[in-house]
Every structure is written in C-alpha cells, then in structure tokens.
Length: 266
Ligand SMILES: [Zn+2]
Image 1 (cartoon, protein in one colour):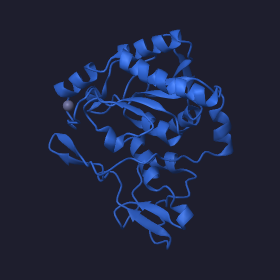
Image 2: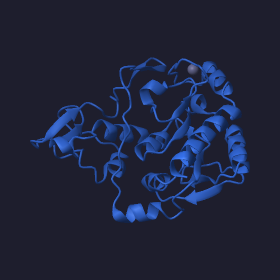
Image 3: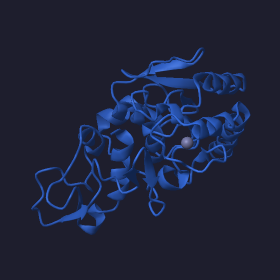
Image 4: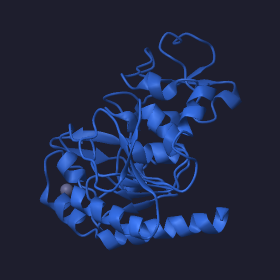
C-alpha cells in the first residue's frame, strides 16, 4: 500500500503521547508496519515501533496492511466504511529536514500532481487526465501564480511550463509542500500529505472513493457528483465522474483557496 495509509495511521495516533500512551498499529499480537511506515512515522512520539508489543504504555489500533478499517474487499471492488473519517496525519521533521523544506522558497507556490499512482490497478478510475491538469496549470500561471511539480523516481509526466522541484523522498516532498499555498491533484499520498502539513487542496476524487472517508474538510473534494463505487477494475461510471469535472471547476476552487490565503496573510 501507499503513503496515504501511513499518513492516516499517524492521524489515528494523534494525541496519544500527551495521554502518556503510544499507539500500536497491528493485530493485537504484533505491530504491523509496512515498507513506508518508518519514513512517515520517524520522530513521531505517538506511535510504538515493532518490538514494543509488550511495553506498558501501548494501545492497540487494528489498522494495518490487509485491515485498513476504512474499506473491505467485496469481490472486484472496495466496500467503503462510511463510519470512518480520516483525521489529518502528522509528520515530525528534524531540524535538517525543516531547513531542506525551505530550499524552494516559503510562500505562494502551487503544487500540482497530474497523475495518481500509475502502478495501482485502480489508476484509471482515479485519473482526471494530464491534459486537464495542464489546462489548470496554464490558467493559474496566466493569473500570476508560481506553479510547481515534484520530481521523484515515479513521476513520469512533467507538465509544460511548470517548475520541476527535485525531491529526495516522499518525506522530503512533504517538507517542501509544507510551504505551498495550495495542492492540486488526485486522491492519494499527496492529498493526505497536504492535510498533514496543513495545506489547502483541490482534490480530484471522482467516483472511486468517497471524500467523507478519505477526504479532509479543509480541502475542496470534487466527485463529479458521483456516488463512490470502489471498483478495482476500470469503470465507465468513474470515467463519467471524472469527465464531468471541468478545468473551470478546478481553477475556480483553486482561486477560492488562494484568495482566501491572500486575505489572511496578505
Ligand atoms: Zn466507478
């Protein structure tokens, strides 16, 4: 699974240390972290790492690979748990990471991510289309905003006329994102990241996954008026949902967030 699950895990653990506790994400016997957990949980006092199963201060939360609480596999689709609402995650950056996060500037830029995780089977259902993202980037640029994109190992598409920020890791990208004015992109790791570093966002949900489950109230979450189907196969309903979200919709939502920030911070 991806980084989004780790960020939601850090949200579930929020506030534990202040109560004298640490959260054990696992099945009650073993703490089950995955390949991305260490990177996201580093420095987080609310989470107990594998090996601390018998420590007196732990509280179990059954959130782990294969048991994510917010969904259940039902044949070829996910059944969403509408009682689950993602809580913004948390990252605990050290001094060097905070300094590195400031290297591209600390005000006003807009991060845009034109592709969701292409290696996942649901990619087609979460894809708004690179051409649409290019349209939004062009219009925001014409309106005077600095538009940027993160370059990592797995980012295949570079939008035209958009600054490319090299990043060393997902965690490093979030340290930079913490200084953005806005994030625009699909439902995925970076929208969870934007919530964790308290950045507004315009998120292209479409018809696959419901914003009430993995979305955040501080973001504009666009579904194209579709009910979430959870289909793990390319789905015409999801395609229609994405097609009914226009470049105008995203541009207007972006301008709404950006002008609110300008009113707040000048
Ligand atoms: Zn669908």
